[in-house]
Structure formats: structure tokens, C-alpha cells
Image (cartoon, rainbow, N blue to C red; front, side):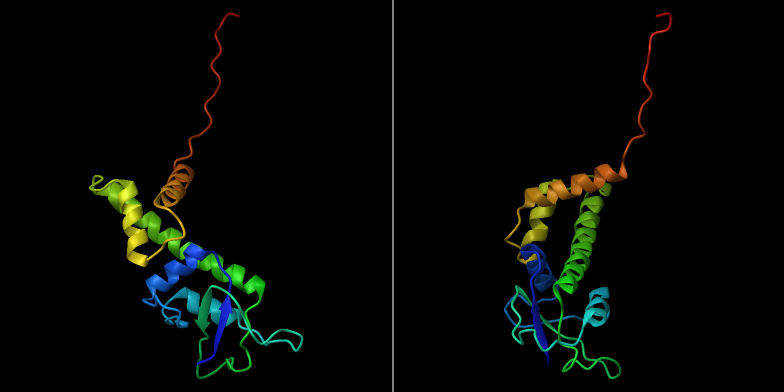
Length: 160
């Protein structure tokens, strides 16, 4: 198993480790049923001669190994640009899950407060580097973008 490390946003690294049941420091093996697997596969590149063979970061990935295609012993490098793309993909997964939990809570009559739903998600995935208030603010921004009102026309008095 070939592995590499990348630097991403800390709470997203904790989220993906918790989601894939890898709470320790062992390399993260991404199942091929996730879109993230294919994103990593696409971004794998050859390591240049002037690049350090030692990678540092807060997320260690076990590189995908398929029967055909890129050999991970040769294509074992993820650039800083690739790390940003992977960060964006994990953020999309995180936001999708958070927003669907919050919308389900609203649909079923607010059985719990939104803050409790956010806190439950943090506990479920072992996320400690972000607070429930920040997740709640994220959801409220998302909800406001969905519910944008059309600009109201100006009312003027007639006769003046």
C-alpha cells in the first residue's frame, strides 16, 4: 500500500477520518464507491526529481490501486493544487451531509434544536477543531441563499 500525506482544513480531515472509521493515524483507505476515490485517482501524478520524497500533512491517504491504469509506485504525488481540489470535494461531502441533517430536522417539526443536530454531527465524527455554532452559521447562510427574496419595488406617494 503506497501512501501520501496532504494538508487540508483540520475539521475536514477529522470528518473524513470519522466518516470512514479511521480515527487513528493510519492511512485512510477510500472505498471506490465514493466520488473522492475517483478525484484522488485523477489527481495522482509522477513525483518530480526535485521534489522531496517525504510528504507532510494532516491527512494520510492510501493511494488507490487498480488493475489497469496508474501504478501507485510511480504516480504517488499529490500537489498543493490537488490538495485544494480534494479539500473542496471533502467540504462538499461535509456540507451535503450537514445540510441534509438540518433540513430533515426542519421537515419533521424541529424534534431537536438545530444546535443539537450540529453538536450531534460533531460528536458522531469526532470533530473537535470547529464548533457547533460555526456549523449552524454555515447552514443559515446556505438556507438564506436558497430563500433569496426578489428585490421589492420602491413605494412612492402619489401626488408629490
